[in-house]
Amino acid sequence: PRSRVPPSRAASAVDGMLLSTGSSPQRALSRFRGTGPLTHNLPSQVMWCITLLTAALMALINFVTILIISNVVRWKFSTMQAIIDSGRLMYGIAVFVGTSSGLSVLCMALIFGVAPQAGSSGAPENKGWLNGNPQPGLFTVRNLVVRQLSTMLANMSGYPVGREGPTVTMGSNL
Image (cartoon, rainbow, N blue to C red; front, top):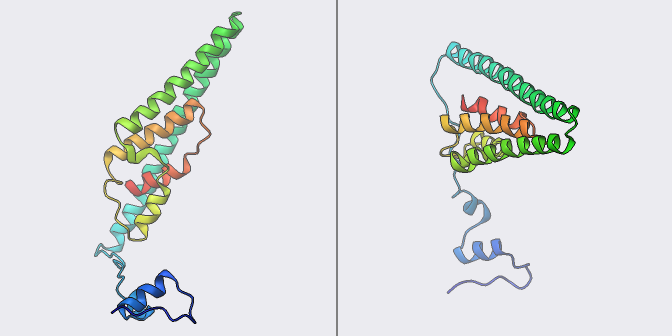
C-alpha cells in the first residue's frame, strides 16, 4: 500500500512522489544524470587556430553584411526620394512600402520554407547547446546561410532587429 503524507507536513507533489516511492530527496535527485562535460583531444595550437579563424571569418561576414545592408537601405531611400522629388509623392511612398514589404516577404519565405530553425536569434538554443543539451539540426550549413540572409533581409526591410544574436549563433555554427 502507498504511504500517505502525514497531516503535519504540507503535501506537495514532490513530497507525495518521494513518499510513494520510499525515497529521500537526495536519492531521487541522484537518478538525474547530466551528460557531463564534453571534451576533446585536440592540441592547443589547433584550438587557437580554429578560434582565430572563426573570429576572422565572422568579421568578414559582418563586414559584408553591413556593406550590403547599408547599400540596399541607401538605394531604397534614394529611390523613394527621387520619385518624391519628381512630384509623385504617393508613388514614392508606395515604392518604399512595396520594397520593404517585398524584402519582408522574402525573409519570411526563406525562414518558413527553407530553414524554420533559423527563425530566431539562436541565442537560447546556443546557450542550451553550450550547457550540454542536444540541439539536432541547429548547426547546419542551411541554417547558417538562411540565418545570415534573413538577418540581412530583416534589417533591409526596416525591422527593428539586431544582428548580434544571429551573429553569435553563426559563429558557433562555423
